[in-house]
Amino acid sequence: MSEPTALSLVPPIVVLVLAIWLRRPILALIIGAVSGLLLLDPSQVLNNFADISLKVMADETIGWLILVCGSFGALIALLVRTGGALAFGRKALKLAKGPRSSLLMTFVLGLVIFIDDYLNALTVGETMKRVTDRFKISREMLAYVVDSTAAPVCVLVPLSTWAVFFGGLLVNNGVAAEGEGIQIYMQAIPYMFYAWLAVAMVLLVILGIVPAIGPMKKAQLAAAAGSPAKEQTNFDEVQTLDEYAVRAMEEEFEQADKQGQLHNFLIPILLLVGFTVYFDIDVWKGLLATLVITLPYYAVQRLMPLSEMMDQMIDGFKSMLPAIGTVIAAFVFKDVCDQLLLPQYVIDSLSPFMTPKLLPAVVFVAMAILAFATGSSWGIFAVTIPIVMPLAQSVGADIPLVIGALLSASSFGSQACFYSDSTVLAAQGSGCNLVSHAVTQLPYALIAAALTFVGFIIVA
Image 1 (cartoon, rainbow, N blue to C red):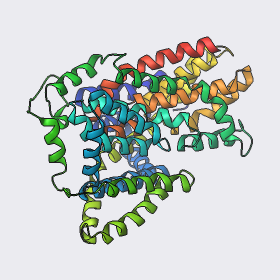
Image 2: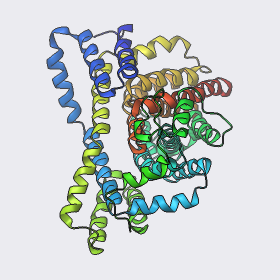
Image 3: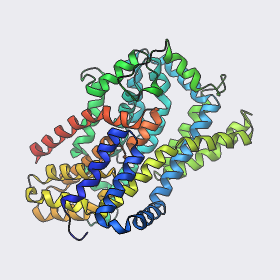
């Protein structure tokens, strides 16, 4: 396709409709990608799909994601089997006195683990889901709290993978001088309105100032009635089990060491965070170093034979395959959207409104649509920043404000799109159905997005 047209909107619409209807995100993404390939060249659909899928699998980012997610699953399996996670759950239950305090604990953990949204989503959800189950909080609410303190918090902290990535993009595109990318990024932090509002919104929801609305209200009512967390995929079917919340923890840790010690949970988690910081915010190196120390640490205590550790790690890796598969399908879908010139179409359609005063708001809307439609919080910006930033400079717009709009849109897409990597991992870590998580948190994300748009209009 040589010119961007409205046809580029067809695949995202297909994906959104099918995902909500079928509740099968991977299938929806594949069908959406195929529909886009049919628009490009009906006679070469099979060849083009084969080429794109191979290209995606050869992508360094996908390789990194498979290794990080799979290895994190392996580490979680060890934490569970040794009883460390059970010990943490018991300790947290003593500190959490009710639903609100358990969600506040989740919120605080999300703020503390600010280094990377993947690390945040998987760690916090996996850590707190048994605690929130105890107080009959829906997994959807837990996933919302986890997701709202993943990408939004990482965006606001200059010591994170987001800051490193976007700082590098600013340097590569001439917006910042060599070595000054993080400095320019920090100037834009006050203007990352969506991230600030998303964090504030989830705190207001936890405190009860903003009530549970729409699908979230149904999920909360189902959980309060005793609906099993793992089966909360249909809000209209409530199954009651007496004292489910307490038994859920026991069942989930059925294979765990009932005498597990808290240090067998805390030390690996602290090592993971520490090593990630030490290796310049590299989560993969942090995971490797953590496993290198954790395995001998468990072996010395004779918690289990090395062969059993390997079996547990393989099972943990397997548990991450649904999340990995969804993100791979999303990358394939994004590549098809790029070939259909979706980014160029959205930007061209909104370019008449790009005056110096309106530019930040228009950039937020355009980039939010793209990030939501493609599920790409990072990749889409690598494509569009070379278009947006020269435009911002040519019309004399406030550069930190425009960067704030870009990052606001990125964090919105990461949280709101049901097949974005952060949303997928938040649902995975929280043990929540992916589409249920996306549908329940979307109203809150849209409220924050609307306020963000108004904020950019006012400030500009």
